[in-house]
Image (cartoon, rainbow, N blue to C red; front, side, top):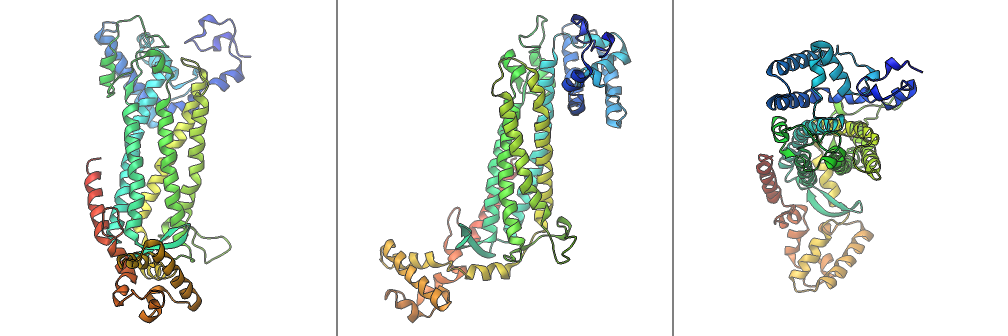
Length: 465
């Protein structure tokens, strides 16, 4: 058991014995919440400015606080700042260091606030900055996809349903489907930032404070849109962290789907693309191997992000208002999610521009599996045959093709006419892969012209992000 003098002096006056050594370590958060240090200083400086404006600090005291924090900031950035477990968290470590540097003035800084509104403010400031960084990485990946889609706007590949060849599409069209997924994610991220950007500072422990504080002033100084409306909600809310992790889970689900297709396409069985060597690794026993480790890891890291979302939802599900110590557990899942998302986006944004398509292999694959069967059915409909009847006719033609190992486009006119006499020589215009994709020339279609229009629209939209 520690001596009484070892108790945290920020709150130890009411206690008659020291905190148990294990409990002190068990309840401390400084090992991970020190990540918030620079944002804690940012919030403290805004609070000090406000206290000065209402004459609770003098201009000289404000200057001393600014100088003290400037020195502390340099120590943190240089990695020389000393963190103390006995001081529990980032807030008390910084306050103690400030007081050591500037004396009793440092003890005045906490006037009109609590660690409850302090940590809520720090976390929102930190996440806001991280959202801005993630937005840039997400934009970089989106631009890489658009560039590649434009380049591959006419490259034909098979489109799949149930992982079976369905209809011919263009590689550029497929890439733009990925773009659309990420574009929705980007919208969710921007929405999350908007709801994150509200200031809890001034809510104090839970009920506000008796001092004549100016919450609008601190909100403005910190770049928040406005103060939060209710002091209870301000200190206890973690919706913004949950919302971010929800965004992250959906994003990672999309990145996992993208990764799965990259892994399949890079395999010898598909041979649609080649991933650059610098994003792959080899085998310690099989010298021929080139493993797509980057997309495999992105796919795997989706699990930890999903787990972090569940952890935060579970953390908050039974908490009464207002702040509870449980909320200390919000940081590690959030920190891990942010780091994971940034790493995955950076990896894919760096890799996508270097992807090389194997156009010959893609086209040959599209020729297999009767990919233009629907085109033949549509052709028959235009010849005044009901779609259900045309569907049956084409099904019989496909069965015939399977029996003789011929694609529809490889059959002669007489072979096709045995299934319907309305088929004429112009049928071959729709049975070619090029004719099939070109015919889907409408908004959202796979025609090369539409892909190029989609990339143009995407560039214009991204210019506004």
